[in-house]
Image 1 (spheres, rainbow, N blue to C red):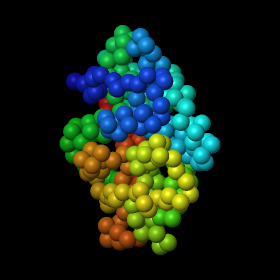
Image 2 (image 1 turned 135 degrees about the vertical axis):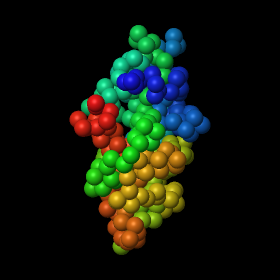
Image 3 (image 1 turned 90 degrees about the vertical axis):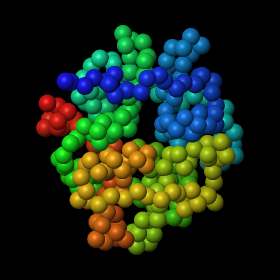
Image 4 (image 1 turned 90 degrees about the horizontal axis):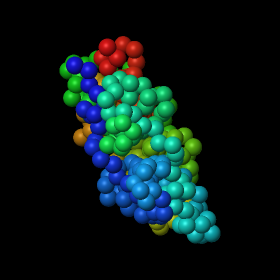
Length: 269
């Protein structure tokens, strides 16, 4: 039986008002452990969406006291993305996968007859792989990205936020002078600086968290399981026989979605 968007979506949406400050948006994202909020008007109609990426852009724009004062007056309505990409609840999942890959977005608003009823995100698709794929089809090495975003531990937080925003990545890998993995800095690690502000004295080694690694020969199913269990969107790919060497690449939830969208995928049959 063909699975539909409504079979995988999360019912309901988390919202904020257009006048919500960036600091309060950060609080709501952290409180609900989500990557984005829908911005609604007084009648509950969706105006746009604001994500952790938007907050990162706001954070590095507030690099001095004058800019920070200005950014503190910026609201969700000022930084939100609109219009919001949406998908009907009753369409096949494969069509939603194609839409995610085409739009290069992390989530879609789910509607029924135009009325918002939920949200479907990359994490939901990753979870579906872990539950639906019965046998090993591909290895991490087959679908990983060879290019990775890296920095040194002494890199200022502001510089890391700027690099992440420019590259469109949710995280940056922190390595030492020999390429050994020290940790990773994600959008969540930087959220607090939206409220507190950041300067060049704050460096990534002070805010990074441990990187999650996976062997290049591991199965796609193993990668999906590891992401779900740890709530990570990206894994660092290594050679388990030489774990301290420079990483070989990264595999993200986007890579897995691209695999699902490929013509020979089980999702396209």
